Image (cartoon, rainbow over all chains, first blue to last red; front, side, top):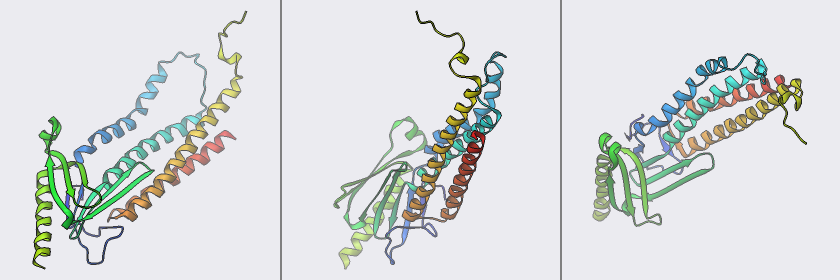
Amino acid sequence: MLGSLQENPKHTSYEGRDEDERIKYVIRKSTLTAVPWIIASIMLFIIPMFVGYVISLFPENTPVIFDSGSVLIITVLWYLFSFGFFFQNLLSWFFNVLVITNKKIVDVDFVGFLYKNISETTLDKVEDVTSNVSGPLGVTFNIGALYIQTAAEKREFEFHGIEDPSKVRDVLADLVENIKKHAHHN
Amino acid sequence: MRTTTDNLENLIAPEMVTTITDFVVLIMVGGYALFSFLLMRQIKLMNRSLATPMASLYTFIGRLHFAVSLILLLAALINLS
């Protein structure tokens, strides 16, 4: 469920899928790309534990600016915000995917609340699939990018942060080859 | 000649300070409630764009998150009054 390359996912569909279309792969970013926001979320949850200590350092005659009700509301709001931050990032990671069906490649992009972009092309229009791995972290964890050149209106599909991009490229290239062979025989 | 005040209580009455902070807290909670509402709408949009087995779980969490933020908004309103 949480892997970069999910094969024949069950109960998965995308908006506009044809009846005879089967989803073969769902590709999302590596779970390792989620590490920075997971650490940030943990830190957000931990910060309130130090607030009591910081307040104890204030002089005794420091004027009170928050009543007890506000302190409680701010505390709950902080934890809710920390959870919201984690959840928003989780959703962004989970729903930014490249869907490969037996007919098409569909790129689903969500950025924040205000941007949604879905691009698709048929597999027979795919001309070239390239993968690369770069940088110390990419080489260490075998995380890289996939570039799909097409003859469609959208010339290139890019997908970054994929685990084992060579394997994904190979799988996709084989699928495209089969489609083109099949089309040629017909 | 104008001089600076040594004590901020000379500018704002002490009983007004907590009222102002309560109001600021209310605005913050209101802003967060709006964020949680938008997040709930976004989940609906995401689930429509890509249907997965996780859809009902994400919808539930989104609604719960919004409900908690509304309860907090109500608490902030009560705290202000």
